Length: 157
Image 1: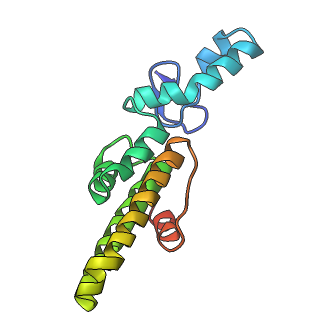
Image 2 (image 1 turned 135 degrees about the vertical axis):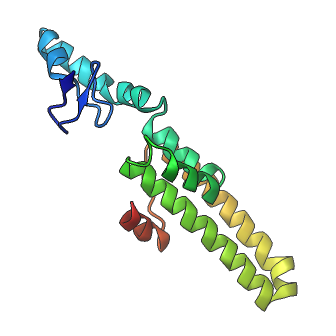
């Protein structure tokens, strides 16, 4: 059993599954600076594989796929509910889905005919474009903080 020099967690293998740092024995056995740099560059991928087979950006992207359903799912799933970035995307997905649903309900109650014919389709189109944008940017590893719900999601994560 090796002990991680970064987070102190005990583990077996070459990389810590919690933070992705290389094992002290593996770094010492590497024999040189180049071997250590190569191992350090492979650490996040190895940590993702050891933690559940999915990288952080893929898990964050999947939080948005089915809105609040996948957001809740990633808050429950064990290796991902400890990752702050994945938790942020899960909470932002939940808050966005619930907010859009509430907005749609309120508009249909207050302005039934106008909302059905004009406003709801425009909101749906804007929500679809925002959804695609969030999927792409999250997959690329960028963190998009939406204006109102983003800070709330950061507090929860």
